[in-house]
Length: 323
Image (cartoon, rainbow, N blue to C red; front, side):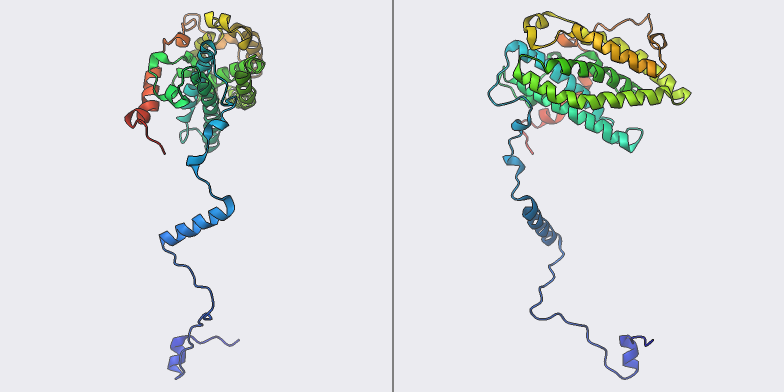
């Protein structure tokens, strides 16, 4: 095989080097590869595929389930929507902390997705609650003080270790499944629409918590011990979710009475514990009892204020800022 001589070898042999091939005069020129040119090319390609898209022109309100632009909540319905919206908002903030900190990458994604689902529930509920007073969902999220929030104590509790987050998530998801299933039959069309969408997402949240409960209970001695500690610490905040008050008397068929959700919750709870081979005696402590839990009336645990300070700092430091 004849090897091709390079320029140095040709010169040594007394032959001129072979000139580099030149493109034809009418050939298209290679575009410059500087940053500005690359960005312009990317934008042009994106425009061909996606068309002219400007986030500023999107009407995000249209994404809020149940918000048809005309429904206005009564003061009592707004108070009820505020309670549920605050539950979802605060739990979403708690779960968002786990992103980049979960035991495995898949859990970063799973807990992050659950947090986003809950944030969507909160947006819809707070948007609807705000129609009674002319406030937006952002007004309600960022410009209320601690005593104005109406979330139950369960959702305010710190994440603790992973087992504590799973125990809290299990209680919350079973309760929300029962709640949204019943609320989807509400005589209030907006609440019914929000619940009908939310219940589908909560079904995944519940399955995620159940599967992790079974894994921790049936894993190592240490994982089971931590799960039982987590259940012991979290269970006292359950009763507040099922307490009726005067608001429910006034709402009538707009919302289910919390006490009516207890039987369905207990049935699912008992089934999960049985599969995990856990008895109530394994995690209940008669010396602890149940939390007073005054969150529905603005009386909160010491944990909520710290969470709100972090959640609201950007909006309060730069009021009116947009992006």
